[in-house]
Image (cartoon, rainbow, N blue to C red):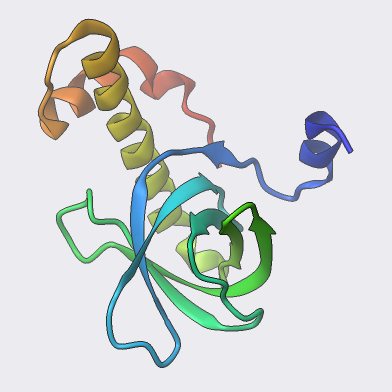
Length: 144
């Protein structure tokens, strides 16, 4: 199946990301780290070194956000890829939409900050990156 065909079958638009995350699975005491692959209003996909059982309750945290911004979800798939696992998480309710939109924007801003550093050598603070990103790209950010 092509990317376009897969995208047309999705209920929500997925926004690519490369932001580090931490997560806690049901019954675990401490956070485990992974990397966010993409996020949408309906769920997210991340990569980690540990398999997670389908239907496991999970809490996703975003270390780049200096607050207790987290999302609760349920693991709906776990696919091994080489020596890691892609994990699909579904959000249990529509109330998560506002929080997801905020996190999506933060992901875009952090990606912008990293890109500017790699391409231009400018080391922006998160606040500076947010101001530049908002000025350049906020009007193009897809509405819900």
